[in-house]
Image 1: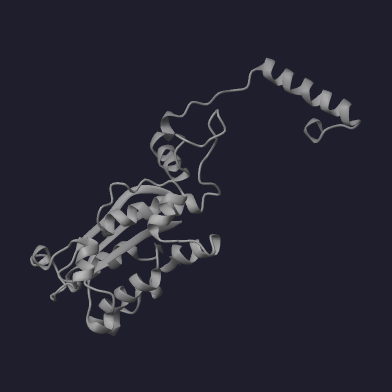
Image 2: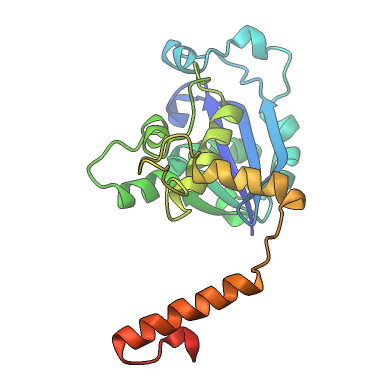
Length: 236
């Protein structure tokens, strides 16, 4: 299954006020593994950026002045996401802006939903953790995803962080095992473990069970059977 974890930055909060997308960040997952394939685009909105938005992402109009418009990058973006499931935190916001940009180019491009499935991790988090904070920062704390390098919002950085959060949130557990003292410190998140598994798969060492170990295992099963007065399932 191909998934694209996606985030955008914008000039403001409301498309009806003429606000536009200024940055798109995409991270590709294939069968729940990070492929290393990303898409990162800065976009010239051809308008001013609200002060509130500028405080969030720090991207200025001057910086974007020589960047392509959305119309110029639309084909590249649509080709990258075509047919994938988009994983987005607060999807209605990002999808609303993307569809707004497509509408400005004409009805022939349709909507994002006609090209991709959409999964909203904010909705998922609210169902998993009702009554709790479910912002991306809150989920990073809950699932032990390191976001200390995130001083300002950025589309690609936030997409990478969300990918780790999504993998941890849907992995069945936030940490893979407990330490010797019963704590989970120092073990790494499920998402980090999945990253390592993909990177180190070729170097994994397979340990075979010895004949002596098998005999001790069978002896243990027989003692359990004698204790319970019936044969264990593992001996059948």
